[in-house]
Amino acid sequence: MKKHFYLFALLFIAASTVKATVLTVSNDSKKPASYTSINSAMSAAKNGDTLFVLGTNTSYGNVAVKKHLTLIGQGHHPVNVNVSATTVDYIDFYTDSVTIIGFYVNQNINYNSKVKASNIDIERCYVTYSISINDSSANWLIADNFIFDLSGPSSSAVGSVLILNNVFFRYSVNGFVGNVSIKNNLFLNTSSLSYLTNATISNNIFYGTAAVSSTIDKSSFKNNITLKTPGSGASAVDSIPNGTNTGSGNFISKDPSFLKIDPNNRYDEFSVNNDYHLKSSSVGHNAGTDGTDVGPFGGSKPLNSYGGDPALPLITEFDIVNDVVPQGGTLNFTIKAKKQQ
Image (cartoon, rainbow, N blue to C red):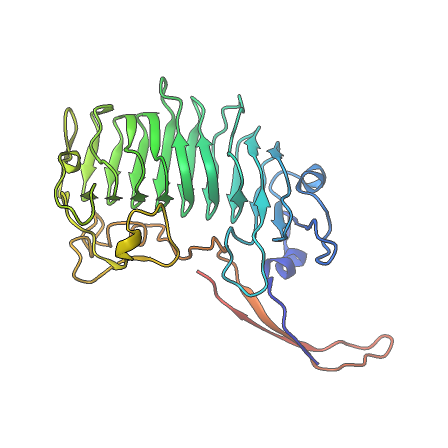
């Protein structure tokens, strides 16, 4: 008797974990798990535990993280068969050392929180509004996400914020005083970067947005592609570095030559029907500061999926060998799985 399950191997690995525990969460009675809400699972969890949150058709609501936890969803637009998005409304951090992977966030992350949270990792999420980082926070990694807006405290420094391989689809990055690295992102028809000082800005593609801003100071622009008006030629707001900024190797007013762009929808915020990989003839192909492609598919955290599926092994077949098992007998089964990037 052969069964096909689209479950992550993490659920099976949990039983062999020595210290940390994996707690499963589902608010759909047809997809039973250990807990029916994220908040009840977090109450039961200990520092260092992981919550695996199944995708359903219902939002899990507001999430206030007060322990050092890893929360893993099934993606914001999962590509796997028969898997729904894992959706929440708000995520607030009230502690350090939290990892969030594979969620659709209806509102904001860190919204209205007064906590100076550090060691935060946000990956493979779709954030409909803003991610906010408060002053004196440190060691944030924001990678492989789709983000409306990302803002810092503006008036004071943060410590080591890495903004890597994201797609910004409305506003962009603003309000950081030093210690922020903005690399291999795709800015699609957004507003320009703003209120940045001593930032490192490299290997990004600014497509349909102004790369030049009078509110960016003493920052470094390297190996970026700029094109404010696709299909219409050069623009003055493409010309980086400007003002007190420095840099080199930028491709000014150059079309990035994506593999597929609908000319009738080139000004869309984002379209899954477009392929934003670079052609081999692109000026940005293998032209980043690290020798990989400029944009979100190069660099150290290349964007692997538009769906936010977590990089966990995926079980595709669970085959029960002996249908009938006597009392005290042994159930034999085989498992097939595939690697996910």
